[in-house]
Image (cartoon, rainbow, N blue to C red; front, side, top):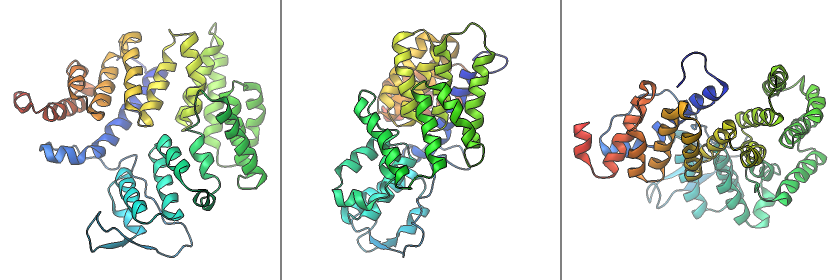
Amino acid sequence: MRKGSLSLLGYLFWGLLFVVWIGFLFFDAKRDEDAGVSQPTVLESWSETAVSKPNGEEEEVLSYSGFLTNEKTASLDALQTLGNIREKIELLEKVFEQQATPKIANLLLQAYVLDNQFEKAKKFYNSLASDFQNALPKEMAFTIWINAFSQNSDAEYKALKALLESLHQQKIFSDLEYKYYTIVFALAEGKYEEAKNWLSALEKGEYQGFLTAIRSVFKQYEDLKDVPAYYQDGLIAHQLMNQGFFALAKKIVLPIVNEHPEYILPYQILANTDFSMGKRASAASYFSQLLKLDPQEKNLYLYMLGVCYYQIGKYSDAVLYLAQISDSRILLDSDRYLILSYLALGEKDRVIAW
């Protein structure tokens, strides 16, 4: 890592490292316990968002026969007691198998979205009968598709924008929400002057953080001298990614990667978005390219590659990358994954020697 002040790219990836560290401490808790490896203590996981019961609805008692015990029953509020969002998803999937109701489908879709599993949410939504889909909140499809539309399908993207218009006409989305998403789509399409004209509509309301972030990007680009226009595209994509618009960020940077393969930021955005959405194999592919393109961030890319390969069960590859790390700021976490990888490979002697 370079010394001195952190660049935009440095902030991006050290922030990602923090998310990875917290998220995976929870995700691998069971594996660590089985392996006898103690875990660092953290206060809260980024993914530990409770799935709440819809307001105003009566408590529904569900049978978890064959999942928890054959006798126990519990209410939907029992979801609050589970450790993290992935435990909630596992429970809801089992419950839906036993009691397929729109209410459980809605909770499961919310949980997928909270965990950034948009492709899984899309597949599950499409598997539902039309009466189930009609019983769900009408904005659910938009919530899923905005991060699950195919990058290769203009038809899906156009359908997503048409859905926004429909939801606005039905007054499901307020005027302010409609303007917000209109700006987001304009940014994703490179229509920056149009987006700037709409930004003032967000002066009052809940989107102040977004407004400030986008205006700062425009100001940052205007202050730069002799930089190409696609640099601004990368900065916009970075902010959309930070706002949770992963698919739209990818829509911006995929053409840049093809046309300007020397530009590092688009690869970082692709790696980050795929990692955030659970696409470990494709994220690893982008991190591998970054390892060649950006040697000054070598240790961070080695760590991310190690985590990706560990999570997809390629433990030998995880060891290969984790064992090369020399940055003291990463060593504690990388050693943890290295030990877990050795244990998964059955190489306990290597752990003892460590």
